[in-house]
Figure 1 (cartoon, rainbow, N blue to C red):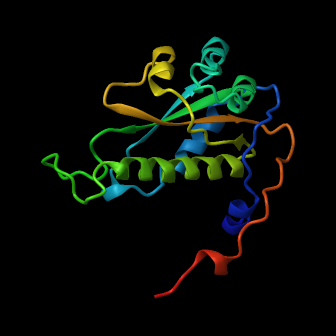
Figure 2 (cartoon, rainbow, N blue to C red; figure 1 turned 90 degrees about the horizontal axis):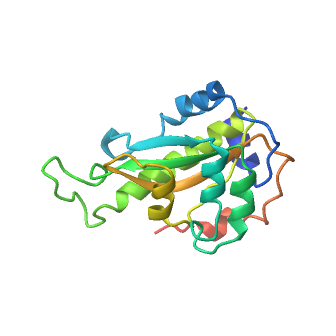
Length: 182
């Protein structure tokens, strides 16, 4: 698939076929996603794949989704949830532990966002559907799936084979509305 076509065609998928995603396929996706850029090449992104139906059902609750019920059905029906975590205190930090810029530790979420998008584009290339979710209680999710010490949960990405082609996006703004030159 052409890179520009992949960027333009990828959609957030919220309905999945009822079939598991082979581990080999998810490993191929991470093999591609590992090339996402990161602060000083710190490579802080980690991927925890949750396939256990009982754990998925516990995450897909009002308590874990902070009452955002729109996400519950998507998570509950997904063959797998990818918990995207990042290693703490690396992006935006100097070796002595001080911040490099006034943005302080916000570079961690910046890197996690790049990793999430790269993961989703790689998944799309491999025929999988994904949607990046950010409304969740990370402590409650951490009670269900152990997040390794020194890592923070950044996003939950339901993943599976799309049930349909995905809903067309709302019209995109023209480039002229998004760019300015000084």
